[in-house]
Image (cartoon, rainbow, N blue to C red; front, side):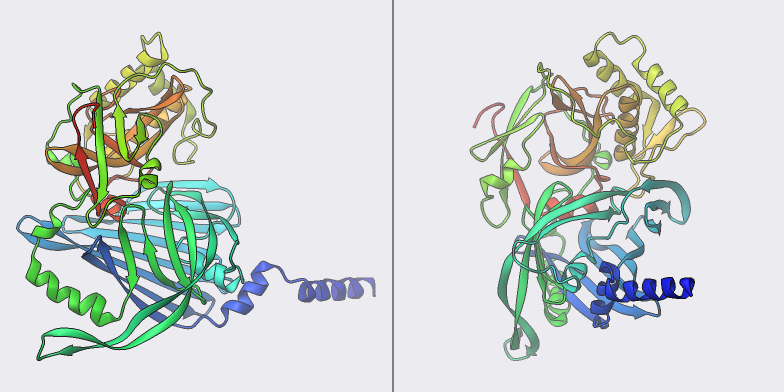
Length: 499
C-alpha cells in the first residue's frame, strides 16, 4: 500500500509539475516540416544563398542549413558549401549536430554529440580521415540554429527577455554562451510570390506577405548580430556588424534571379571581398618596420557606425573618432591577468607532463615574461611547418622530424604552451592588411604587461605586425568563416600613426 501511494504521488507530481522539457515538447508538437530560402548579401552585392529545412523524426526533429557562397577562383567562380545538420528531441533538446564545409580542394566535417546532460564530444575529420576529439563537461548546449525555435516554443519571445544560453560552436569546437535580449517586435513586408516578365525581362512581385517579427540582439563570437524571427521561431533576417545580411526571399528571388545575375556579372565584383584569400596561401610576408598604423573602416555600401569600430578596440587596437589604430609595441602596465585563459584552449585535458616539457623547452633561457613570449613564438615558428591547405587539421600534427599545422593550429599550439607556462593566451582571427588586399588569418594574443599583445607564430613575429587587424576571438581564420563577418568591410590604411 505504501509503495502504491508513493508511486501514485510521483505520477501526480510528474503530471502536475512538468518541467521545461515537458512543456517544450507539448508546444513543439506544432512544429511542422517547412523550407525557407534566403539571399546572402555583402552590402548590396549578393554573394550566395541559404536554404533552411525542417523535418520531423520519430523521436524528434531535424534541421538542415545549407549555405552556399559563390567566390572567385582564378578566372571563374566556384561554389563553397557549408551543410549543417541538427537533430533534436521532441523538446528541441540538442542530440547531434554536424557541419561539413567543402570547397574545390577538399572537405571537412565537425560533429558534436551531446551524449549525456553534462558531456559534449567534438570530433573532426578532413576528407574522410579521422582527427582529434575534444570532450567537454558542462551544461547541455543548444545550437544557434535552433535557439529561435526554443525561444518561440518556450514562450520567451517577449520584449525584455534576457538570453543566456550555452551553445555548441562548431567553428571553435567548444561550448560558449550566446547572450542577448529580445528588443521588441516589428512588421516585415516581404515578397511572397514573383513572376518573370518576358517583355521587360525582369522579375515582378505578384503578392506580398506581412508578418510580425521579433528583434533579437545577440552576441555571436564576441561581435553583435541582429536577428529577426517570426512568431514560430523561424528566421526572417540576420544582420552582422560589418554589413553581411541574410534576408528571407521567395525561391525565384533568392536563387533563380541570383543565378542569372551571377552568370552575367562574373567574378570581378567579388574579388575585393574582405577575407577572400588566406594570408598563408598568398606568399605575402608582413612587415614589422612600422610601430603604429591607423585605419579608416567602412562598409562597401555606406559609412560604418563609429560604435561598430569600438567593438574592435582592446589590446593593441584602439579606436578614436572612427579611426582604428594598431600599435606594435610592448605594453608596460601591470594589471592582473583575466580569468579563464590558463585552461587548455579547447577544453580537452592535454597530457600535462608532455605539454609542460615542451613549454619548458620553448621557454629555455628566458629571464623575463617578454623574453619568454619572444622565445616561444620563434620556437613554434621554427618547429612547425605551415600547412597552407584550405582544409588542414585544426591542431598541430606531429611528424617524424617537423610538425605541420595551419595558422590556427600553430596559434592554438602556442596558446597551449603559453598557458602551460603560466601566461594567459588566446587564439584570435581577423584580417591582414597587405598587398592591397584584406587577407584572412589566425594568430595569438598573450596577456603581458596588463594588455593582450598579438604574436604571430607563422612569421615568428612578437609582437606581431601592425597590419594584423583582430576581428574575433577563436575560430580557424579560413576565408569561408572570415567572410561571414567581414565580406562587406573596407579598410583604408592611413599614414603611419596619423589621420
